[in-house]
Image (tube, rainbow, N blue to C red; front, side):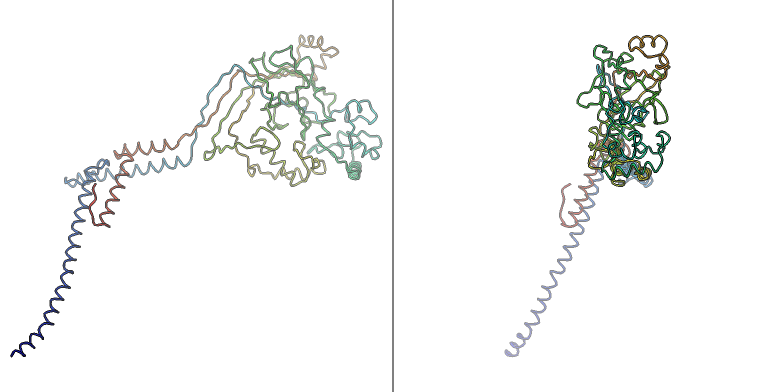
Length: 518
């Protein structure tokens, strides 16, 4: 039996071990399930407590009334109010952001007064392009020598001209007058004569130069300025003269600028008729050939160093007293990203940047590229001057020119001049007698047909400042959003951080199964 019993005991041991092993294996499983359940219950409790704590403590007013134990209708009412105000706040915030992105600006206009004010540059352009006496002067005339009218073109075409005036020959063959016909002014100007002149200059290698032609054959400042009357700021003891004018050749004749040096700008200390610039000009109507459809002068008011157009000014005719009252404006623009997108750009042709000057330079560069010649104002000595043979290309290129393709931003600082012009007949009998005594040998009829009394002065010694200001910047954006947030939701930007803190806490509890101290 012992053996049997012993054997039986030996047989029972593996069974007991197996049972114990299974129990041991099952025990941790049950324990693990209990732990997860306990943790889930604990997490649920923690999240619930955190939400309750947030609702009771948050600065988002009104949300606590939705979750407190109150009548259902009250909680629904508060929920509707909260959702409605939240929706309107989001709408207003969206509008504020759109307004901010649009970068609106305000222009603040103020009037400033000074004891003295920088006087503008005054450019005078004769409407008559070419002097008649110079145009028709023969090579052996005294006028030809007196005005130094000899040009390399003259000697190159002497054989073809056969004694005809050199100035007239250059106008016939080469001067680009756009819609004017030179044959109406130049005697015996036919296509065959023009072609023979062009052939002669091509053989000699001496080409027509528009700028040099106007400098020699146009009316000069010495001829149009009547000496006794060139006065600045009533300083009769220090009268201005021809040396105070800078000459500029354009595609439409010569122009003469008073006070044009940017490094030596005159300042006016007197306003009204006693101040400013007073000039007496002689239109020399008996020396007229061809011009811009009228007699007299174009007066252009601009800043020193700026580009100007001979077509952009005030036309004054002979026999008039022209009084031009000036008003100065100074403009300060904003840089990008604001609408004006101003830049401090420089130009090749002028020291002072303007948008008009930039567009003019852009057009000139396009003419150079397309027509292989340069306009009179464009500085490129290596290129030949544009002439009559280029008129078709010049016209077509100008017509097809699109200014918007040019990189010409607004200047960040700009000075403009507005004008008020008053005209009256000049001279009266008394003034004519005074002028006859001062000048001598000038009849009343000549004055009435040729003279222009020009006065340019500031109306007041001051300027109008147009300064652009940011209308809706970062501070305005935050203020508007914060104000609407406080008005409709009773909270502030700090509430956003409270919500962020709650979100972090919920993520932490869910992932780490721990506690988070609120």
